[in-house]
Image (cartoon, rainbow over all chains, first blue to last red; front, side):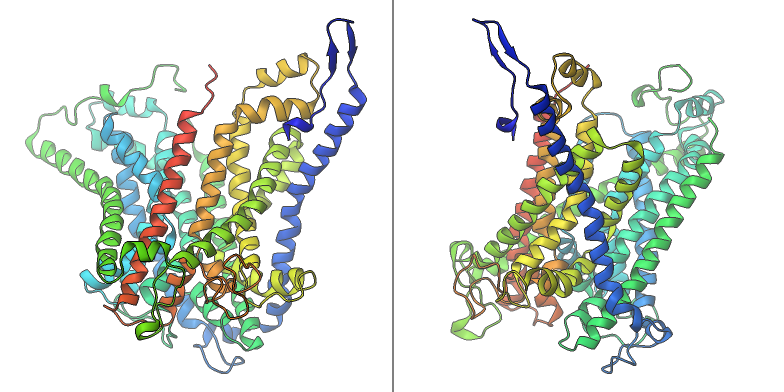
Length: 302
Length: 324
């Protein structure tokens, strides 16, 4: 790329300098257009993606899809158990990751002294964020399903998912805590508060909106994750909504995977309709996160 | 910081407790330990992943020599008896070929988008374009798999490459590329934006055009961040599961009957992640060699992505240009 840039020809001996400004600017204009085209390709791709889902899926949207259990007859098939499974998995993993992630973030930001241990944990967290999700599935299968005897249950799935989203929650919680001005802490310490009193009464309330936003975004990642739950829960059909933490489960993306894999075209269209519902839920969750951030950012005054 | 006073550094914070009351002292200590346990849990996760993969893979390597696994050219773990072979090469080729296609799409497009957004776009244009990239990044990968299977293959590829299979590595690679493009774009854009304005102004002052400044000054100055974003995107492509599980097919490259080449992107091309996903979607007997082979493949996959992530972090640190 660099070689293609035309450079002004300078000849020191004759003092002959040809700036060729017009030609160089024309090259620049062409490249600028190419950069623009590459960026707008994203819009085109998003459009094609939406079209490929809405054109087969829209006519298959029905209440039955939400209220019925899966069935061999596509017209009767629904994903009620999968919707409940997704809700439980996302709530369970969200709450677990919120508690553990916030604890980690508070320790790293408010307690730990800078040093090797802190650096080590930090490197470790960024490495965890890069582990393929299906590897978390293998971890969950051995630790939760086998060792802890949970079986291929909702609980095992939720805990696996909690570990998967934990790095995201830690990273966003740390940012939220770091954004709390130190004058708040200093005032609290100055009045004789202990470390935890300071954290509990001043740092956490101020950081809370940021932490919450991060957790909701992590939950919206969890709702679309499929691979680890495929390993932990298996892909066989589940006809009932889960009735307890040790019940078998199905989640929406797994149901979509299941339907997409069938040879009949009808199930492919049903999968498209299920994708529309999944995307609407995702959109709602993301809007909630953005709304919360907006709401609290108006309130914060420091 | 807003107060104008230097912020409290962690090391000169007051002791946990000033009151000296016994009960309070004890609870302060207790809370500290609970928080330490939380943060150690993240370390425990890493250790757990490594140990479990190694131990379970060890069961596998008792039956299949490491050498035969890594360099064998036939992968038929679900066959019976003497037809069962555990040469992982076809799966590795599947992963490498789909990731190569993904890289060819996501790296140039992502970098071009990053350059446009950071150097050329007006505030209004990036206010429209950036959310769209974020949406693309947030779409669950199963949806990209559906897109590859029901749109990329039949609508985009079929008219050009007549004989392409329903399941093929090419469509999966393209979908992964689309998925990874926003990652490259947003991380590279951050790197480009971090280049100080003075460098650009110096280049303009010497008579360089906007494009020359971008390509010869700004991009080289941000190269560490750009390369790190490239490696991260490739690592994500290697670890991507649902797209290949849906669209790339269930027989390893070169074993689908239709073709004999392990480079054949137009036919079914199972990847490492695809194998793990497929095996779990069709219940497998525990304790068999085939079951333990999942962990052998998992260990190889983890090692590949782990090394890439380390390299990416090292590049960021080692080649970062510091501007005071």
